[in-house]
Image (tube, rainbow, N blue to C red):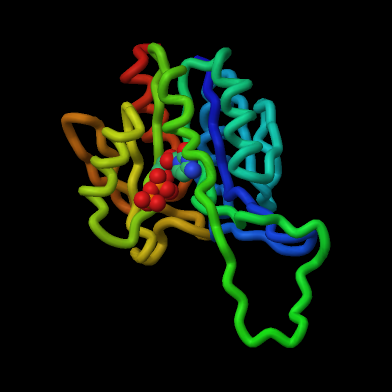
Length: 211
Ligand code: CTP
């Protein structure tokens, strides 16, 4: 099958030297890309800024902002049958981006005005067709309710949710502890290496697609 996988954070610039971002390392998305390519699938990986080696046998497209990632997803989705949105897309970007470095100028307080970035999954909902869409949800509370809401609202076939407050799950670590939901069921997996989580996710996708 042909997979489009997104990974890593996005960066939303504030001025030439600063940005808003998040703690995503990209490891989960890269593990998915490695595992899918090792299984012989065709993989395009759209990656935010990360410090990881590119996966073997995958086409890598590098992006910085959420808007760049949306444009790249739109461009590459046409030739793919599966989209896995493992990227931690920044939800907010500065409303104004300074051309010059912002100076302190003796100020005691600074208020930033932010505006929402595009929701990539929602923006491409109409292009879904018969494709399989898989999302991720990193939560600190109400994991089940939030995962089910995102599955429904983003028109996903599967969502992989993890509680980032659990030790060994989520950001900047080699392991993850996730619950995977489809419209009918949920399955909690033990703490596993991200590569093993990737294997299980791909097993589920292959079952869905009967590839
Ligand atoms: N996502 C996306 N575009 C965004 C934000 C998120 O496509 N601007 C995708 C993520 O890649 C992930 C899924 O949507 O697969 C859920 O992301 P998450 O950040 O957990 O959800 P949000 O929609 O941002 O919801 P909330 O802020 O309420 O948690």
